[in-house]
Structure formats: C-alpha cells, structure tokens
Image (cartoon, rainbow, N blue to C red; front, side, top):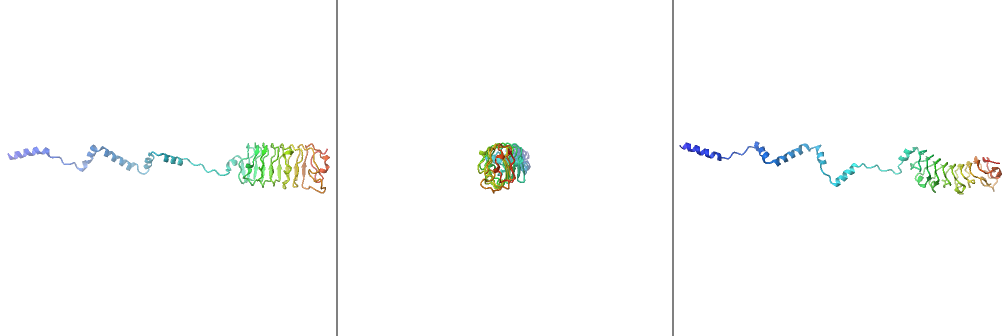
Length: 298
C-alpha cells in the first residue's frame, strides 16, 4: 500500500520539473527566432569583411557622396591644363611660310600684314601678297634683318621709324606697290628698289639718300618723279630713273658745277630713257661721268 502511494505522488510531481537548459549547439536556433536584427548585423559585417576588401574597397569609396569642395578638386584634376604659350610663338608663321636657316619665305600666301617673325630672322621674302601697310612694330624685335623683299604687294603707307632699328639691313625692295612717298631708310643699305610705284618728287625728302654711304644700287624707275632726287651718295654704281616724268636736269644733278676737276668714277650706269628730258640740251651735266646716261639726246 505504501508503495502504491509513493508511485502516485511521483507521477503528480513529474510535470512540475523544469526541463534542462538547451545545449550550446542549439543556441543558433534562439538567435534565428529571437534576434533577427542581430543576424542581419552579422551578415553585413561578414559581407564587408569578405567582399569590400582589396580592390573592391575603391568601389565602396566611389559610392560616397562628394561635397562641393571635393567636386571642385575632381574637376581641376580632370581638366588638362594647356601648355604655357611661348613668347613670340614662331610655329604659326613657320607653318604658313617656310622658315629655313634664318630665312623666311612668305611668297604668294595672301597675307595682308607682316607675320610674326622668328627673332633670328635675317631674310624675309614676302613677295606677291596683299600687304597694305608696314608698321614700326613689324620689325621691332627682329634686329638681325639684312634683307626685306615686299615686291608685288599693295603697300600704300609705311610708318615713320619702321626701319629705324634695322641697323644691319642691307637690301630693301618695295617694288610694285602703291607708294606715294619714301620712308626714312636705314643707314647701311646697299640696295634700294622702289620701282613701279606712284612716287612723286615731293614724296622724297631732300636728304633721303645723303647719309646712305653704302648705297650702291638705286631703282626708282616707273614712278611719277618730276626731277632726279637730290644729294645722291658717291657710293652709287647703278641709278635707274627711266619712265618717270623728269623734264630737266642741272649741272649739279650728278656733277659739281663749281668743280670742273671732279670725277664721279664709281657710277657705271644711269638710265633716263622714257622721260621727257632731252639729255643733249644739258652737256655740262655729264662732264664728271665716265659713261653717258642712257636716254634721249635729241
């Protein structure tokens, strides 16, 4: 009887006994059901550790939203700066023209002004273009020029001082232009050519040639001169004045009226044909010359 009572009491107390706590291997089940946010945070951390490492870190950085300052810095880095412009950039002229060993050839390229020249330029050939004016700025920084040829342009005006700094200039050709007067000429000229223009005697100053002690060749033919220019230098060998409007000459034109012993032995050629002057009427005008001028004598 006592044994039966003990069994009954045991059966009554069994439901009241609490189950043992879960083992460590079942702990994940609790997280799955009770801590959803915690599980998400673990996944995010694992993703960053595994996939946002090394090369993928750059992708992570680019996702960041830049502020205004960083955008400006990025723009500055993207824009490639232009190369600094060189002083007296020579390339455009030497592409349009031909630059070779101090010589610049700009012939028949339809330019209407003197192009910027390389500083070392010594010879400029700008023939048969459309240049209308020469200015002092054209040659201000080109001190080594020795020859300028502007034949066959449309030059009407030359500024005072255009050639003043060209102390080495020896040859200057302004032939076949529209000049009405001569500019001040540089002192070391040996050749000056201004034929086929519209120059009148009043367009040449009295002392235009007086100090040109090296001038050897002077070409002023096919103009509108009414008289032979005054004070022609002793150095001249060739003087071309044909086809002008020269109507008379004097004893002092080529010689010295008050010095009958004076001989002008350097002159080899004087051309006066095509002028209204009759040379035979002025015999004393040539007594100092070794050769008579070419022209009409009757």
